[in-house]
Length: 217
Ligand SMILES: [Zn+2]
Image 1: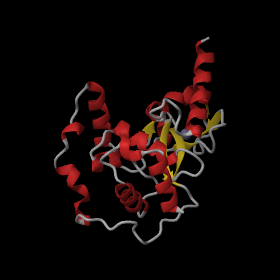
Image 2: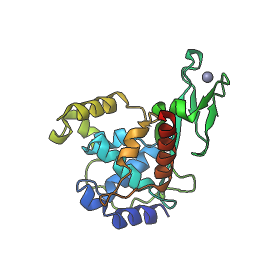
Image 3: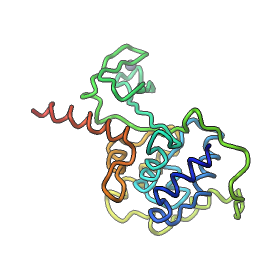
């Protein structure tokens, strides 16, 4: 099921033409390697290891998430603002929640208040098991994964203030459980025809936008 889904997404969404350097084997190996020791799969790490920008990586992750039969679930969270709860993450159990509360101190938050602080994590869907056999044997040395860190490819080098910010974020956030800003996810959830990739993320975006609009009025 894992390969079937991966192949289906890769071919039906024409990932090859969108990301010429990203082969299905690279995606497979990254998921496989990350899933072995981490709950969350980081688009920051994927970007660094494969020499693409954070934006491109997030877009690719949206494709891997894109519908119910995708590979990833998206998980939304923010952090409690009380300093005594500093490391306390508050996860959305679903996107229909309008009020969330901190399990540790009980503080209640409205969606409107936390909207700028929401972050997104990617996780392999619970019902997906990665088979032991690898689809295609990796040609290069398995120890060479971190080669990308030794010398950055030219296009990863900052070209503009925005890509500089994106890159330094990626550089600081080596942790797999570091979420992506919700706005970046909203921005990249669009295919080349201008349509949303993940319906769930689109639904959440609409909901959040409505709250913002009503707040301004
Ligand atoms: Zn708290």
